[in-house]
Amino acid sequence: MFSFFLVIMVLGDDCMPELPEVETVKNTLKRQILNKKILLSNIYWSNIIAYPEVPVFKEKIKNQRINDILRRGKWLMFELDDYFLLSHLRMEGKYFIRKKGDQLNKHEHIVFLFDDDTELRYHDTRKFGKMYLLEKNNAYDVKPLNELGLEPWDERLDVTYLKNKFNKKPIKIQLLDQSIISGIGNIYADEILFLSKIYPEVSGNKLSDENLKDIIKYTREVLSSAIKLGGTTVKSYTSSEGVHGRFQEELLVHTKKICPSCGNDIIKIVVGGRGTYFCPKCQKR
Ligand SMILES: [Zn+2]
View: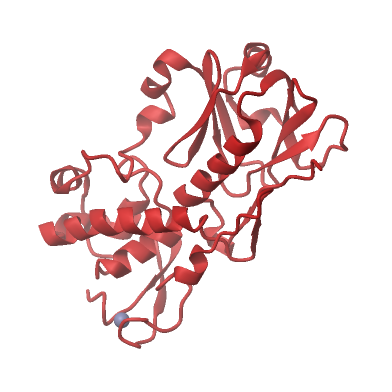
């Protein structure tokens, strides 16, 4: 009964869960662990706990109830009685719900025991994930949340905001910059630029107002649509409630061979170290 699992497996160099995947994990966990009380935590890989020191973390999280789960950028935010527990999945982080006493998997590094004898286990084969336990009253004013740019749906995200933020670096790199718009990753950046008909290496500060309007419009459209479809997952995606990430069926350019708009060959280049797909005819230099 408790073999609930939530797995995200995506493409090679794009295997980082992006905003829609984190939103899907959030919604699935909300159905599973809301209102449970954390009796204690076991930390088997202490580097995942970025703040505070592990003994303090363990002491503070005792007897805290999970009242809500939020998301900011790619951070999951467990709202406890007195704290926010922030969790970034990075490349491979996953959450599993297990029963107390179930055998520990070697990749399960953090375990939270609940008052109903179930456990929330953080599983991370790469161990790149991070957690912070922050006082609720100033969580947004300190690292890492104070380093994040606007959410895609924030009404302050407009042409003026982007003009002030974008510089001469390639637009693709700046779309991935979490301090400008938070939550866009490699897959969705390619889709947004394709729909906006913008060449990925053009300087951010060379874009017209129309280009910037398109970026805002398509950022919202692409991410909303991906959230509705449970995110993008290429190999498999399973959760306790049978949610499948179906957005990969909707991808227009990322990992594609032929442009769905003009029939031209899609080209793959590397921008800022990230595999980048674009149509040279629809996205002219
Ligand atoms: Zn095309």
